[in-house]
Image 1 (cartoon, helix red, strand yellow):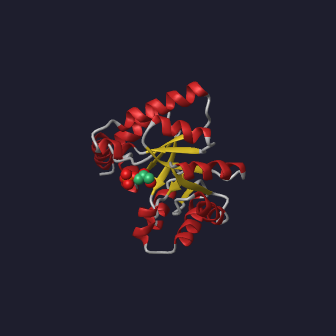
Image 2 (cartoon, helix red, strand yellow; image 1 turned 90 degrees about the vertical axis):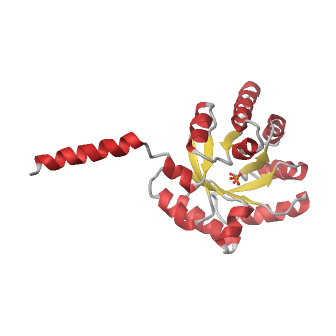
Image 3 (cartoon, helix red, strand yellow; image 1 turned 90 degrees about the horizontal axis):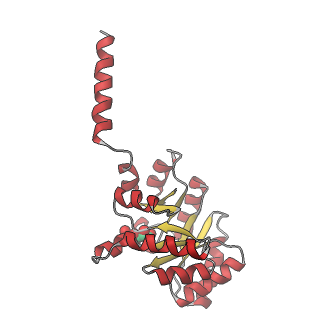
Length: 214
Ligand code: G3P
């Protein structure tokens, strides 16, 4: 499973990239707005740090306006992946961008039928939002499972990018279900390392070692 960081914060991206375990980054308009810096500067810097797929979302909602926006973003770096919403215009843009060999992440996916449409439009990644489904009392993970089965049975190569991840359990379950990518907040990435028995075990090893040095 590839690990993407779901943030536009450069400090977090630098910290996480140092581990060598981060394969890419996803941003969205809400995450970029928090940073109070020009969008294109942020995208450029992220691509330089991560040197891997970096999703940058178009703001326009109609096809004609989406296309020049997407093409401008794609010129920032070879690592840019254009993020489009799962709408009629977004999928039309997806199809055109893929014909131009520009990678596309289709975002805001909440149903298997939407994922089917995105795959037919040639999406590189489909982003089902697990946490937001859980938030409204539905089972986000059931959607990942259904999309995985659907893509396998139909032979689609669109990668499932589990998004809107709230905790480490989402990562484990999405990985078991075969999602190729998980995008996670920095906090969740850090939590993946931790287990109380690792902490107490290390303390005991170090304490025992200290005794031999006396
Ligand atoms: O970036 C897309 C997605 O991961 C957003 O997550 O936490 O705002 O539902 P969230």
